[in-house]
Length: 317
Image 1 (cartoon, rainbow, N blue to C red):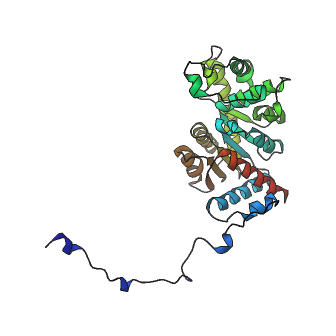
Image 2 (cartoon, one colour):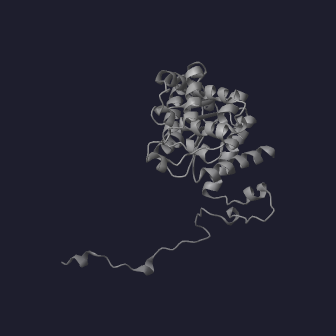
Image 3 (cartoon, rainbow, N blue to C red):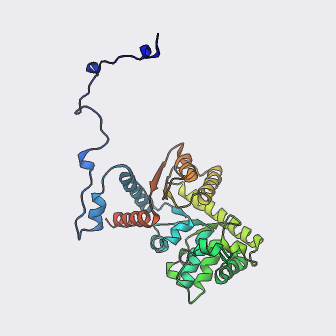
């Protein structure tokens, strides 16, 4: 018997066909997008998005955040440095000032960009070029300000608060655009979670490991308190941190649950590519016993202002 004799002959005339009218379908005509009209409002644009996939999820997340805020629950954001580099500090500040965003936490790089923008009106050096001669990360003013504030007050009041207070004390600083400064001004927790050696100021001779460690440990424990609050029907948003904040969040959540804070809550991850840790630590693992996690993929400078505007619009209704 040859190999080809093992191949069956199919009678396509015997295929069992189904009815389109009876077949379940994922997309309905009433879920389709409505084209935007020139001069139309944001509300019209938002309502015209298709009720499909990420647009549907984003609407659901906005509703979750609005509900949490109206019920007085904690809405917190963990951010990476790229969020600051793409110009989104003022968007976060706006949400913080009205109490929509209760707390912000970030990796160490957020301090570099937040402080440089507030002090010099610019940030984000050309790493490729500066690395050639070893000048990358060697800004004296940046290091002096950040390390000075940490060394003076960080172990006593936390890293984020020390920098925020230092910016408020500088008359030449544009504190209005600074997440760190506005957190200190309005009393909202802005915590900073440092991995030693990852930030340019760690290269400078004034870097004090003891002060840095004590300051960021202070902030970690404060962040654990924030996440304990989130578990009571709140929301945690991971904006563009691929490693540090998802890992820090997971440990803070374990501390909170160990101490009896075991309620259900909502999480979401926003990033321009999908990463393992945010998906697992932020979106999936926290909700094995309930709650909801969302994932959104796209550029920070587009998605986050869209999300913030939609929250504002929903709260105004």
